[in-house]
Length: 478
Image 1: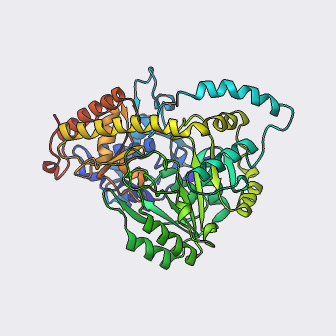
Image 2: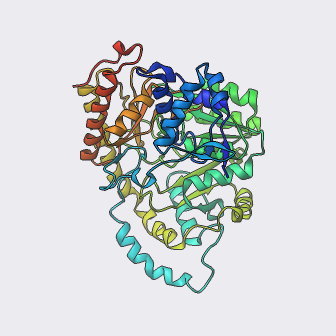
């Protein structure tokens, strides 16, 4: 049985300008659907439109679509299910990771190596762990020690917080999904940024939300006028924002716009879900900004719900995140949680409890790692990719690199042939947009960053040998 059906209109939107590549059209259609499956824009287990319907929607022959579907089937990207047609799958799933067997370097995840203190903190936490073995192994709010530590960290950063304002989750994604399920009803509007974190889009959409985007542009930030108008005109139930070192652009929202946005959201009855998972990854930001909720005036505090985690600071393998909100909402979230999960593992919570007081020194180390990655990436782009632009970011986990032409999906496919997994720009948008951009992570060791950029250079040369219309604007690589 399949999980979902993708209609012809939705697939046509995701395909974008798929005919622009050289070579046979059936091959171009196959390549674009293959990338959509690998990127997750078409989830595994999705039933594709029938051949005749897709041919009519794309205004091509049915033979062309049949040939593309055959390539997908033979490549392991679809399977034929009696009565359901072609259903997507991801072949060789185990190989799509950083490992010696698959030989791939994975740039699809903007992550950093584990903090050096994890091993020691784990050993020390075993003594604390014994105290929990006599009682239940889960709780919905989080262990008291960690709630206290997270509240203290917010207070130190300038946002007074008490433990009853904290609910510990199994990572930030779990927090986004729980909040979406509790705060949204089917058909509600949800304000989102464009581009943004793709799994947040998915969580909001799965809760039944209709997404209304506001643009975030590298070097310019948020479209202030559009943001104000969208809130006023659409009255969204929630707004999902990443105001500090936005993923993927690296932009940070000015203090004045934070105040305005909170005021506008309060007037519209909108709850702002503020993702601060990258909020402390400062390299050299000029402005000193407080946590977003600090900019709420008295009486507006309930408008802002903050999402945090240690995935970007300590280690993504510690699946520990949290929600900061007013105590009444925390109790509501805790009551709703059991239908999706029964709590965060105790040992991981104890490890994070021990490490949070050391966050200043952890962040110092992260700052140097990110600075090295940012500066080296800018140097490589300047030297080897004259048509590209890597806007300088003051912090965060990635650079939103402009390619100079709408070739991101084509480049991502070519990079796979060179041993690099990287996510095409449209994965961070809606309806197939953002083909002119590519997210490149900053937190990898320099040797891996250089290896990945070498692979991108080879992939760029490969697509230059089969240029799309307008390729004379691409430039060259050395």
